[in-house]
Length: 374
Image 1 (spheres, rainbow, N blue to C red):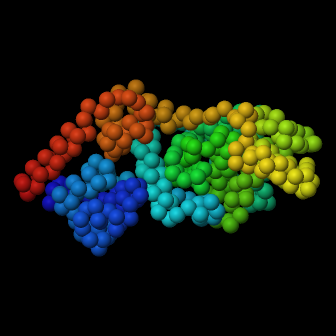
Image 2: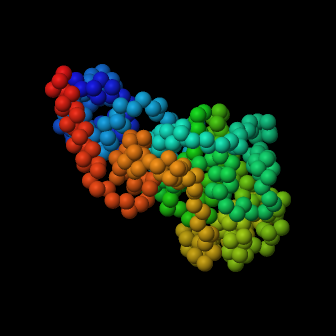
Image 3: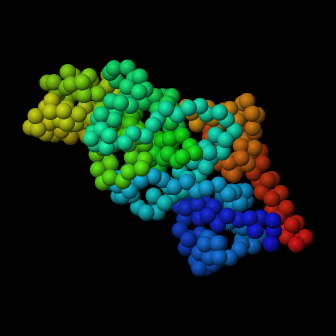
């Protein structure tokens, strides 16, 4: 046994496999072992030899340090239980997404340990104290954050200003717009789909903010509706938007969209929910939007400018700038290859110089040397 084999954390093997979208059977085939053998390894019922460990790192693309780390595996909260869209995603895709989010959460936990992050002013609120009215909770949130009347100009900037971290994420499916996660030792995290339009991103992000504020400790089958009502009031406060929702037409909806910075569809639904439009007129406008193709793609000329997260990149920049971490050192901190660090966090053209290859060779040699000594 090498110095590594005795320290292997089997949970990290499971996490690495799931993050690459592999089943036990698929990984076992690549390792040329039985599924039963891999099941026992992942269950902590048997050890793993040096050669098997090296092949595992090669197939899954993580350095050996990944498999020996003792970081807790971060799970997701109660809001995942009743999310309708996510129930339509395949189990394999969800497993991969959740594993990747767990790893990214581990990364942020490590980055935050070396820094003073500041206060988080996002606070859980008991919905029952407001007679189950999400709109009242949204009004309280706006008031406590001193949000000016009218539209919110930049939803990402506002959430990050109050201690949330918004993380661009590729869910590899159109059925997931965002996932929020808030553990006790971390700021609230909002993983958002990088491929959706800004108007949809803003509403989705405020929907997840509603979950974070209202649903940290309670399970309610109406959570999705409650989060939707929170987002609608947070972005389009009833008192302020009512005067804008009279005499609606497609042309007026298109005019209101750049001002309120929400979709034409969201404005139409808000008018319906507030009783500012008759059901018949609402149906007529939905039909007109369908015929014009606006249910799939609203007019490009009224698109809302892109909003970009900043906090995660600022954390990485501190390590790279003030703390003088090289890409390889950042990789060792996060237990990633330099190539993957550059891909996820640096978005740079920094030459790899085959550094990963050299490190891998040295790692293999060290393991073999220790094995021979044993």
